[in-house]
Length: 500
Image: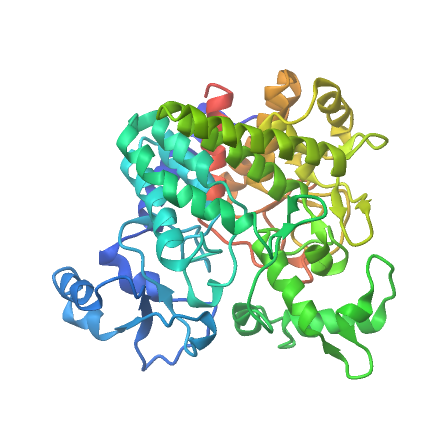
């Protein structure tokens, strides 16, 4: 494929700039934001919006009367959110006071880790206030809903997503230099940090964290919206897989009762935790990643190292040298633990560690580039990962994994965030030629598909350099959503890296 010409690149940049407006949700868009294609909804009933108990519901209603038409208000119902997520019997949107950007397509809400890559794009496009507002809405979620949520819907109250909060804060600070604003973020940073560093997310044996979503039973949005042509849910297809295949990746009896043909409650805990990881779905932690609850993952612990290092830097900027030292010590300790448990010297790759069996799972995955991105790897470790680059590099960029499983977070698929992390990680250790080659490959593919179809999408087949992926995905949802927030952001970042 030929690299895109300036006219094609300009067309993509124009599309992205316009798309930010399409994907922005503010108070005036509350009805648009409340609509959710992932749940059943009686067209005669209002869309529900839940407001934090810490807020003044009547004040918000009065404010909305000045913004929305009578017809729009009639299609909305505002309620105070119950104290316990299990008490929510009818699902709805979780209120956020200021503008934010959604990924696009069926994802009509603000997502945890998507937001970081969207913020990068907004900053490249000089949408500084909107990027700052997004960080503030993430902070609002911590303060009012207990954590940065998977996304702001009631059925997602029991899980977070990969923590890239402090990176987003510092990226915005680079543009604003607003020390008072930076200071205001410290309490929410500490609150969110402890979400990941106490049980159930902390594994005391390793001192590393793992994904551990709360809540019971099937994920509501999966049951309601992820149906195949035969009307089977994802969980129906999983049971069929368990009936047909035998494997030793994990003890299936923990998750599936063959006598009753039912998935266990531990299965649903694993399923929800897999969704908290943002990698839904792969076979990285065994089929459907259900065994994720027994693993210290590379991605999460590197991001927490980055959070510790970022928070040290924030304290340094604000003149709190004692606190900065404490955060650097935490980062240093985690770096040692990552190298102890997650680095595989023989393979020359970072792998997830099963603290139940005491073994690393040698599943080759693009998260091996995360320690390079964060600067955790030694020069020798980075070189070993670089030597393994050919395992992941394809015509359209970086493969998510080297395994074809029928899941969207495995081969032959590639995703914008992982391509950016790989590129930035390689650049950090001086592998400029390889980094820029991957950047060009990913950009060539995305712009080529944009030229054909007029949109950027959620994911790509990086082997075939195609956005037509649905026929290759057999579990979870198979659609390829348009928009698309994080692809927009990564495209702009890669263009910047290539000085285009």
